[in-house]
Length: 317
Image (cartoon, rainbow, N blue to C red; front, side, top):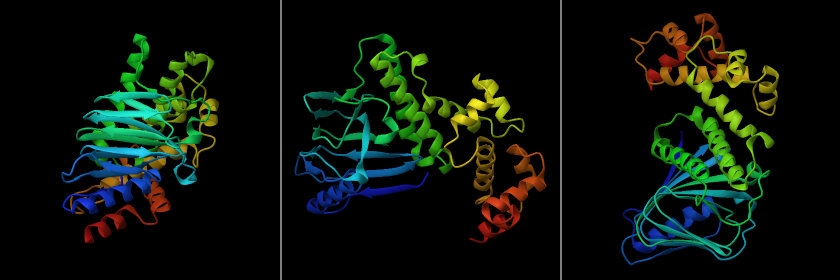
């Protein structure tokens, strides 16, 4: 997935802090960033757009982040899910505080004043979630991975493990997985928050989780020519009608999403491939197309050029 990187390495200390402040303001709105020592502030922030979510990794020395007043900038109207990957940070908001160790996470409303203090070098994953995506779940005080019940701890650990693996792989993932990753993250988080409230899943269906399961299944079976909506419905133990309803608000039907995902996999395989060795027909069959002519027709309709022309053009570059 495409990545925007902001780093302060090699700059004078004052410029380092200014650059870090600027990057923080850009993504999170007005904040105060304070270094905890006079040592060089070598920090790096990377940002990826994943469907409806923005995901950022933060590597920084000891510092404090502070918002001392209510923020009202609509550009930053989102919740923040923070996973500690390295080091220890203390997060405080309202009357709650929590010490984040590696593997711990916290969900909070960044429009409300808060502080995050790290007395040592840290690495974090921050997921920005548009407010409307969690609109059906009442979020008040600071939410953390603290839990008494074993089943709740297990669910929190699943979310933590998923986010940790995601942080490690973000730089190598293709653009096509952004939306599925978004759905999976939202589904797992919604399940965790729902379980925390004591709501039984059967009393509160979670379409985010179901869509995530469907997208994961599609991505795992794109190379199967028999992948159809009927088969997905059978595997998900639901009706075709329910699946179509589930994806009703999407830009494309579920059928079209399957074909678009296959085409994108083929485009990525052709990009940078050796024109003298690649077989376009073999690639088409590899990703579930039953006909080379059908594949070429769809490829041209989607990308404005034939697979062979795309391959030659890419080799010229």
